[in-house]
Amino acid sequence: MHYAYNQMQGDFIVTARVAFEGKGADPHRKIGWDVRAKLSNSAAHVVAAVHGDGLTSLQFREKDGAGTEEYRMASMPRTSSSWSAAATFSS
Picture 1: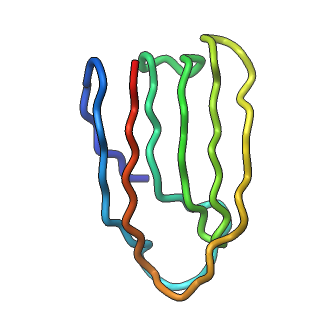
Picture 2: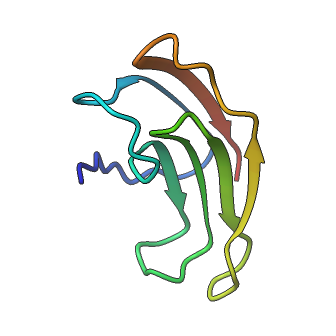
Picture 3: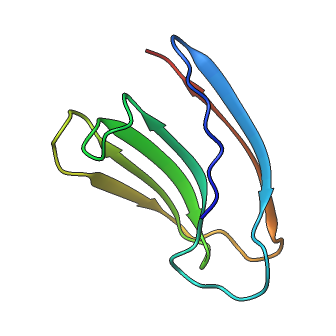
């Protein structure tokens, strides 16, 4: 696993141009963002990710210690191995 970490406060915008390494469609590999209120495992967070099989999902925990919920979007066509994406987060 590879993570880039940056602590931020307030409103912010993130952008990324990313690609999976290697061939295959392992459904468990992911590219995306994990925005957390704090670093603990049970912290409130939101995860936006594209999975190795093309599934795009938004997972979130509204409050510390709550269960994680998920919204799944239609799978992206595998016409490219790289993606560009942007997101705006507001506190």
